[in-house]
Amino acid sequence: MELTNIGTVKELLNKNGFSFSKSLGQNFLINPAVCPKIAETGGCHKGAAAIEIGTGIGVLTKELALRCDKVVAVEIDERLKPILSETLSEFDNIEIVFADVLKTDMKKLIEGKLSGFGEIYVCANLPYYITSPVVMKLIEDRLPIKAVTVMVQKEAAERICAQMGTRECGAVTAAVNFYSTPKMLFRVNRGSFMPQPNVDSAVIRLDISTEPRYKVKDDELFFKIVRAAFSQRRKQMLNPLSQALGIGKSSLSEMFTECGIKTNARPEELKMEDLAALCDRISEK
Ligand code: SAM
Image (cartoon, rainbow, N blue to C red; front, side, top):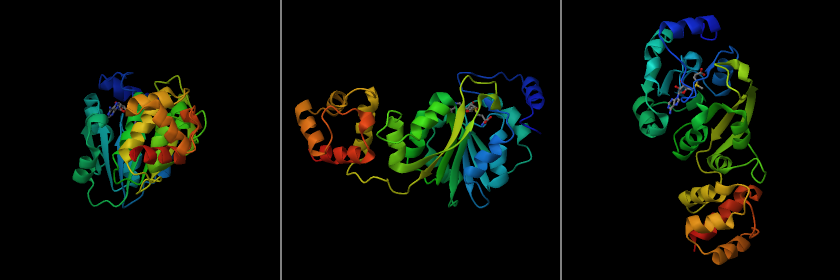
């Protein structure tokens, strides 16, 4: 079945009485060039396994299953069950778990369903309303995965792949850079989806490092600092940090100075090395 043919997709959805849920971010890919490209740039190959988040009608799932030995997908919408059993009927290497990815213990899922695979790749066209939490979860849970290749809203892609120390960066940029190397792969215009969203998209790849790329004494404290510092991105970070960490402003500004950070610094001015140095200094207090 041609899952990028608009007529075929409409017929399939009508037959099953399926209507798109805007709140679940259901914009399905209908550009035939995109899914094979995600699977290939995402690292899929024989001997490896893939994890997908959000199957929709299975257009990307299929491409992953053609290239990998096994695919495990997490999809929240059980209305897609009968559709997927039709569209993916020819594959015996796909397992779909109907659950909310944000409430799923991904480590357990991998141990239970993908043990024995040395290489696991996450590939997805993410529901945009949860892009940052999903990316943060995949990164922070320290899963045994090689790379995360996901389609996200263009602006989110630019934020995630931004250089630290520039106006474009945010908490997600720092979190992603701590455990992975992000790369912008290619842009996808809004006309590639049904229904058409009112934003353009981009596919990014995060290559996961086995060890954090920046050594700090306390990883948890690092993420706490990042969240607090970027909670008001354009403002000076001394106040929000002082409140979040319960450290007086004068002691904290001394620590800033010891780390070579201006006391009136804004988070967007900092490099990863500055955040790491500050984290280690604060952890000594
Ligand atoms: N992969 C398909 C494609 O490219 O056409 C569908 C992508 S669509 C942008 C996002 C998919 O994620 C939808 O199928 C939606 O039901 C699913 N989804 C939304 N929220 C989810 C969640 N919290 N956990 C798992 N899946 C979710």
